[in-house]
Image 1: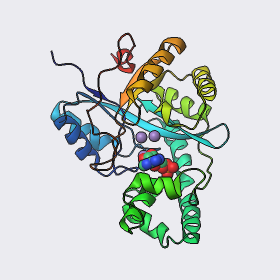
Image 2: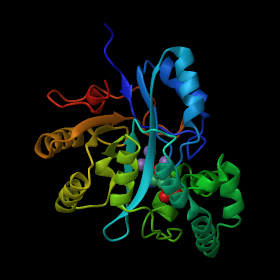
Image 3: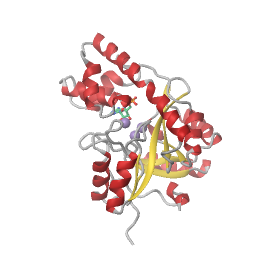
Length: 280
Ligand code: AMP
Ligand code: MN
Ligand code: MN
Ligand code: MN
């Protein structure tokens, strides 16, 4: 039997990805993925088309979402909801509320960028957003690259969009408690996305893991396209210590832009319980 190739974290044009849901599924299948979740930021609209495409290919598909939350002192953290019911009304209403702050934030980001010589960024970013309700820093980054101000999107974050840079605007996303409650209420499994990516000390990270487990969080991403193999070993230890399920995802956004393509992760470290073990 062919080994399971799970990729439980990626994006489509419904948030800040560059491919349609069907294109994401087709690419995942071509790359050998056998268990796929689409996890657009704060948005469920891509799921029906992704599931239809996956059904056509005989690829096992998991409904997912990546919820933006605020944690501690203006730290944005991403919580994955995996195997959720996309028809759940409380989840839909919660996500709608999270999305509703994005447009005003985008206008504020554009005003800050204007002051440092990057003009027309609101309209510019909007041109890259397949879903205007989900206008994101990733869309600003693409516009700024296209304007010739930087060679690639990571450089744009380093110079303008990361916390502490001139185009960064603080924002209150959902709370940890609410995000997990929406996910669990929709029958899903809550997983902390790319735990290495947050600017937290090890002690703060442990505090986050504890608080997450306290409110019903079940797993963490041990493998992510944005994490090193050393970090995977560290998070394998966290899984054992906190009793977390282990998840893995590329965090693919688009060809040529992402840290990793769909389906290219190594196997999970031995001895962990994968998040899909409890999905039957
Ligand atoms: P937002 O939700 O609008 O704050 O945008 C966050 C998104 O920007 C993330 O989901 C990533 O897709 C992208 N992003 C964040 N940091 C970086 C970075 N350093 N380099 C490239 N893309 C990034
Ligand atoms: Mn993203
Ligand atoms: Mn993320
Ligand atoms: Mn992501």
